[in-house]
Amino acid sequence: MQDKKIRVRFAPSPTGPLHIGGVRTALYNYVFAKKHNGSFILRIEDTDQKRYVQGAEDYIKESLKWSGIQWDEGPDIGGNYSPYKQSERKEIYKKYLSELIQKGHAYYAFDTPEEVEEMRKKIESENSGNAQYDSVSRKYMCNSLTLSEEETKKRIESGQPYVVRALVPENIEIEVNDIIRGKMKVDSGTLDDKVLMKADGLPTYHLANVVDDYLMKISHVIRGEEWLPSTPLHVLLYKFFNWEEKMPQFAHLPLLYKPDGKGKLSKRDGERLGFPVFPLKWKDPKNGEILSGYRESGYFPEAFVNTLALLGWNPGTEKELFSMSELIDEFSLEKVNKAGAKFSPEKAKWFNHQYLINKSSEDVAKQITPVIKQKGHNIEFNKLIKIVELVKDRVNFVHEIWDQMSFFFEPPVEFDKKIVKKKWKEKTPEVLNNVINVIENIKPFDANSINNELESFMQKNEISPGLLMIGLRIAIVGEAKGPDIKEVMSLIGKDEVIKRIKFAIDNIP
RNA sequence: GGCCCGUUCGUCUAGUGGUUAGGACGCUGCCCUUUCACGGCAGUAACACGAGUUCGAUUCUCGUACGGGCUACCA
Image (cartoon, rainbow, N blue to C red):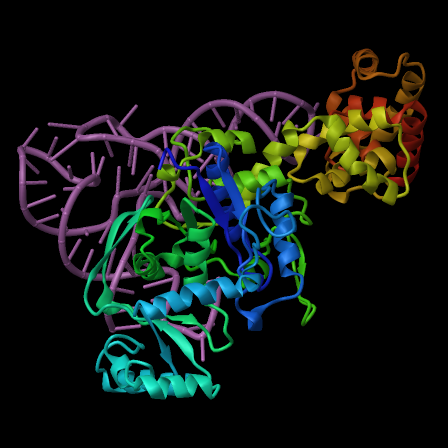
């Protein structure tokens, strides 16, 4: 393994938006490849025409890009193993399929879907074995094993629809070695004769992924746990082709579960529990249904990636914040957990908060600028940076900042009743009226001078801070929130402060 | 039903044949702040169960329970 070049693939099918479990799979593939100076390949598995969804492929690519996951080979950018879309590799699969048929590892089956269904129902009702097309039932179904050679040929030539199935041996032991889970042994008798090529002439996943992984020289197959049950079949296919030496190593990732209860995280959970299940917003082209995304919800891609990275993997230290390059440095498949992880929307928010407070105020100010313009305000950028500095660590998302800073731009028109009732005393208007003169003479109008002058005013007149400072806050902010009132005053400016104080005196009963 | 995988605080997890079983999110309290947050500190809470191996098992083995995945001419 060490002397071989590391090549991994992420192979989604464009049947809809990629959900966060898929992004995590891509992420683990990516960081694993980069750690070992290998290649990360994007391959589109679009062999099911019926389920093809317009726009899904672009969505997948955009999601990966937004997450900072760039592929080295794939559709659009190409590579040495083109094409990277399975629908364009039809002929390749046909060639390998006929090899399997020739070697006697696959066979033609003419049963209609209804006939197969009937067989299943019959076995189920009789309770006479596994309700599947396997080494037992194939003996009485309509296929090239039960038909004569001439009859088979005749049917194919006459254009009768058929599928090609794997001829799974009756009872051999198949061993699967998984990097995360260790050895797994399966009796081939419990497997069914999976369809390798559908009646439409396109291969199923099982054939296509084995052929492509071989041809694309994939060294490690890192995919979700839902593939574990079909891995013995894949191993069998490598054997059939005599590719055992080149067989990739497998690593099956634990699933992402829904936050409540159990079960695979699904698209409905997001809407039901109020958190995004998808990296980007998605609008269903058929019914117009809209699914929310992390990007549109205000998450930083770094925070999103960090959240996913730690669901199922942990380096064994107490570190929780990882940049992409740190993930690349520290990731290892051996440290991936076996058990599934419930997704926690709360923790995801916390991660975003961490990234937000670690960003420079300048950076955050840039991001909030459009919102300020949209609210109809203009502000000198340096001043905005100072405001952001005061409020950014109070929120989880950039879009929550406006709520924390609106009073810098818009004077209060109403005053929070609760705090007024509690803290707006009978003497407050008089005190505030007196302090206006003091404020007028503060020079320079910065937090420090304001503090000094107000302090001496309070001392001289024996006024408690509880009266003056809270009074000022009510007048200037309108409610019991916000950063240090002296800082607020200096940023709002002397004239505006006085204006607000007068307004409050006149308007608070 | 069959096959496969899994099980440490509510959640994400660390960890070891002998530990006060560690951290983080959440929650609660205190401090800071005469505001609200942020932050700091503290508290809360876990080895699914039963056997076996062992001087000793959360750790190893088996079984049970529970959970999950797969069981398509889908991936």
